[in-house]
Image (cartoon, rainbow, N blue to C red; front, side, top):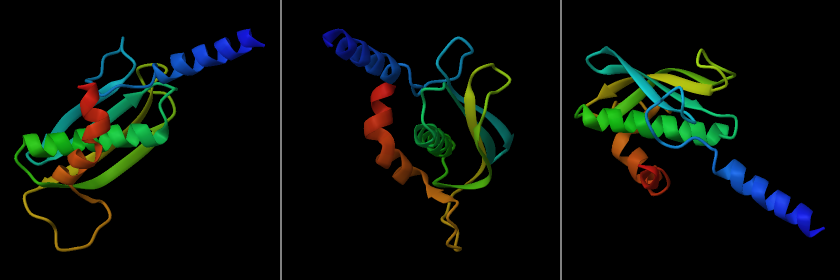
Amino acid sequence: MKLNYYIILFLAFFISGCSTPYQPFSVFSRGGYKEKQISQNTYQVDYYGNRATSKETLNTLLQYRSAEITLQNKYNYYVVLKAQRRVPGSVYGGFISTKQVIKMLKNKPKSKDNNTYDAKEVIQQFKSTIGDQK
């Protein structure tokens, strides 16, 4: 009976330790981000995760990276123009991925679009969990 308890405890620890960290992507890693500049204020941002990474975690990592890119380029907001969530597999093998195309803006758009994010707010919201991984 105690053996089963230790096996379950070990598996829980092993699985939690295998989720995707916040880092640049490398084929030999557990996942990470990649980005490609499309125009002066438009980027495609991809996040690759392993099978132990939840959809919510993958999306959080993607939004955090999008916010970082926005602030690094001296913009304040970003609008998600196109998104593709939880693609099974990828060209890199067993990774799952999520990606989006963002357009960065200096000023908040007048329309109340659910696809518009304040980059500073995104960083603030998630920095306690993601910031520890950097």
